[in-house]
Amino acid sequence: MDWIPVVFVTFKALVFGAGMFFAIKWHYERGRKGKEKQSTALRTGSKVAAVFVLSLLGISLLAFGLGKVLGLDLALP
Image (cartoon, rainbow, N blue to C red; front, side, top):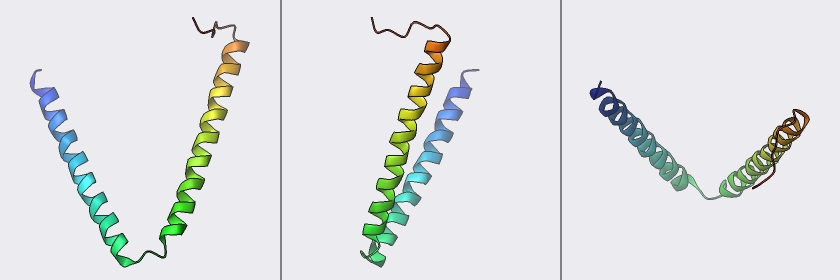
């Protein structure tokens, strides 16, 4: 049973290492093509970030509302 963490951590390191290599390579090659598409990517990224923050706010409000309806004590200590 002691070999399982070693195998899983090694596999995880290899997968993340390969993913980082290809992500850096893709971004480098894309940056060499031209800078004119950079503003479009920035605008799209900001839209995605805004949607993420709004959905996070909505889910947290829903969770706290449901907790209050169910009678959970959600007060800070």
